Length: 352
Image 1: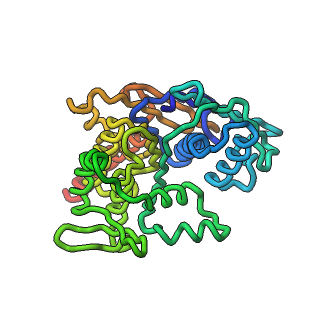
Image 2 (image 1 turned 90 degrees about the vertical axis):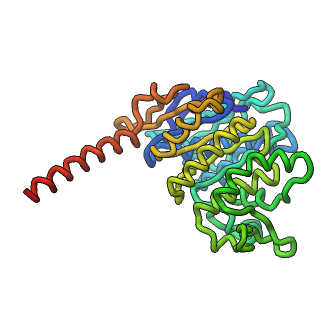
Image 3 (image 1 turned 60 degrees about the horizontal axis):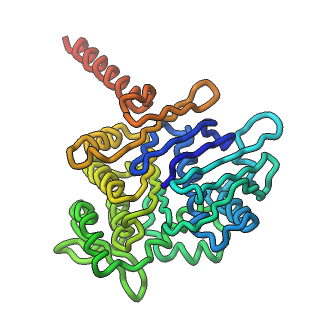
């Protein structure tokens, strides 16, 4: 479990101590304030640790540098340092549930691909983190994997990592039954289940009463739910783990957003630490409704709001959403309501 992130001079992120819930973490903010950068940074640090075969500093320095370059896709590593006059140094520390999992790295503006490991984890991490970008990845499997492996592309590596996980076969036995409880809501929303062709590896949505449907023929919003269902069915997101989901609301209608919100809370209740970045007031309110129910009232949630203040981004964080003063989505929705009332009044005046 990730307890805290201390970031200094990393891209546009506020230089602050980010404190996280062991269950659900919701990052709110408009475009361009660093929500995605936060998710990618956390994912990179955890993914390097989870994949490491050796935990010595020299091996980790190469791994952190390469993963940062592959996930963020800058021209060189120094481009991830906050833009200021002159040479600057970035330092990032990740504090985990166990001190033996902690890590701290640093690099400077002039760094091409060099990272200094100031503190290395000295105990392996057994769970694999999962990153969901705003678009679905179901339609990329399996053709995307050989292209990424054999050709230079500008696709960020989170796409490859998650697409690769989609190929893990489904569970069987007792763990299959455990996954079935979490899958029920998703399969009802999709009106079917996800399966694969053993010969080609292609994924399909098996719709009740209609047979198999190729994923490119399935609506993108349904594909996003199918993606979550697949990683539950194959055990990747079962029990302990980490899910980083950037804009779950993208391409979802309100009905599916309600399904996703409840599924995310259920994942958090099952032991997965979830990080969601959003600028959707609808999704935000849906989280509040689900978390306010008797069934999920015990699930801790951490709310973080990012907002632009002059030439910098500022962070507000709390265990209670009503203690967050700046929620841009809420401010814009209230302003729109006022504009709409004014519009109706002007239309009424014009018809008199």
